[in-house]
Length: 184
Image (cartoon, rainbow, N blue to C red; front, side, top):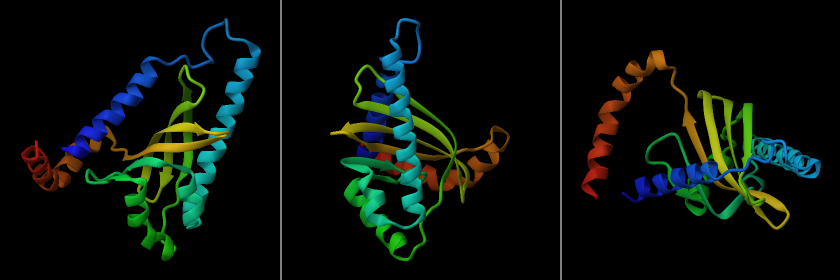
């Protein structure tokens, strides 16, 4: 139940930020300075996310985890993968030590800003060993530096293949659904 509650809270937070957003690049009354600042911040965040992906591809444990805030959350493709930073580091450490990490490359990326200059969020399509995945997350500005506070990795499923995928995943996930319901 805690996993579901935290996931729902995270999704609601992102939805709230989006609903309250003033994307700074819409409307005609924005000043040139604000648009330039937004463009600069988008470049900075995009570079951070690219470096974030390079660090994990290079199995650079310290560099990769330095991109996260101390209270960061990582949500993976498996329904059971909902980790705080410390738990994610413990799970990932053997992969980094054996140099068997993941290699994600952004195919498309969109970055958004809310009314506060210290919060941004993004979504992107990634070229991965799992084929196309979607990465999304929330970033916060810590001092002068952007950090990942929440990262969500999702596998994409072509709509035409959904029934076949459901057939494969249903036995395991039906059990998990019952376990989670019993904890309510």
